Amino acid sequence: FYSKEWNMSHNVYIKRTKIKAPVEKLFAWHARDGAISRLTPPWAPLKMIWRSGHGIQKGVKIAFRISLFKVSMIWEAEHIEYLENKVFKDRQVKGPFSKWEHTHRFIAHGPQNSIMEDKVEFKLPFGFLSRPFYRFAKKEFERMFRYRHRVLKYDLENHVDKTPKKTILISGSSGTMGSILVPLLRTLGHDVIRLVRKKENLLKDELFWDPYKGILNLENKGPIDAVINLNGVDISRGRWTKKQKQRIIDSRVFPTRLLVEKIKDLDHKPEVFISSSAIGFYGEREDKTLNETSKMGDCFISRVCKKWEHASMDAQKAGIRTIQLRTGVVLTPAGGALKRMELPFKTGCGVRLSHGRQYMSWISMDDAVSGILYILGHEKIRGPVNLVSPNPVNNKTFSKILAGIFSKKVLFVMPRFIALALWGELGKETLLTSTRVKPEKLLVNGFSFQHESLLPALKDMLGR
Image 1 (tube, rainbow, N blue to C red):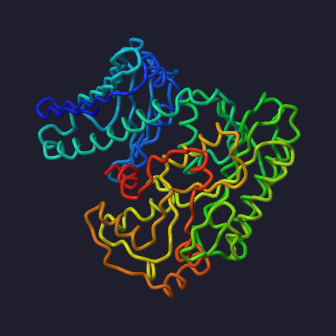
Image 2 (image 1 turned 120 degrees about the vertical axis):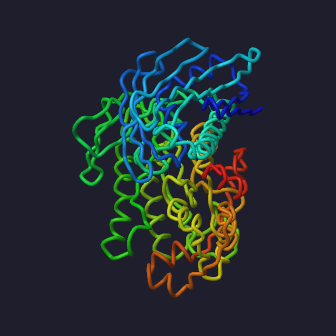
Image 3 (image 1 turned 90 degrees about the horizontal axis):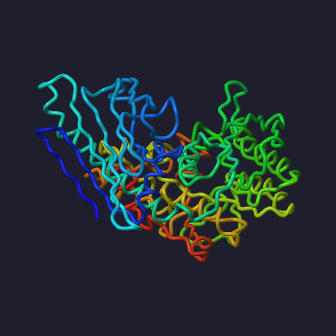
């Protein structure tokens, strides 16, 4: 069950959720690295920038950078109460509220169930002048805690203790997908090593590399159980000049090739190598349904994906289970297509692209990272894997559903010739191409999607 309370006169918000997990497991999850990031909604304008101490013990301090109405400020909080398996509390030291105290209460509900209770006592700044904004605060609190409790419940009931602890090396960890995947892995107890391009002030979980100069030393990192390669510059930024095309290719092939070269020579080889690709492999296919055995398309992005996937093949030859992730449009307001579409559609300026019959093979961010986690734990899955939802939609349907979430209509159409004039080959292959893809391998191997349909996926990702 879910329940919520709102006491306007005392400015108290309470939300409770029943979770099928022992209270000890629920409490321990909150103490793990990554818990704060995992519970932060993708639309929230805040990012953790430092912390003193670890876990949720009394005395731990945390600071976020928060942006409100385009104004950046620091929000500091301190943990002021801690009782194992019962409660911990944090209080604002510095930030946007006149008062903020957040009590996280853990209530046993039998030996195998528990109730998560979040209670926030707060006051807005500026005294009586803030009264008109309390209703807005209520709405935002409900958005935030509905997201937090949904993610927490799903992770505890479906992910925790499902796979043995692994040491996982990740490239592209600061990207849109990597920044969500890393906290998920950490809250599940896995050790994560992040490959970074900086040389100085490395954190304990960071390892320097330079894929363009062939620099990567894995010898002192101990046994690595899995490698996840998420590298690649954004293909949708700027027109595809000859120079930009080469950057797109190099940013995918060089890192993949170096990772394969290094891991296949290790005495203790990783069990699995998961390397990114994209459904652009299939190219323009109109309304034909495609699976992992479908042939390659004939366009620039198809050729990029072919080179990208080919660079991973030597890992497979070395006996490492190798997966090429053919990822569709990943839905999250934190980045990618949905981030660029959100404001126009929210303001009633969303557009249908050309005739709108071109298929968009999408996947929610929740299912994208859960899919990667599922692949990690299922040895039968190997080779190309379509990371998309089971129900692709055409652009006309996608636009209508997205506009409807904001109670708007799609009033405008971008003709094909304008898309080509503005973006050229990029527009043709990313906006106007139709690719209708089925996640056959995931379905055959028993993966359950949280979001099979577009409407609930968009609602959850946008907090609507």
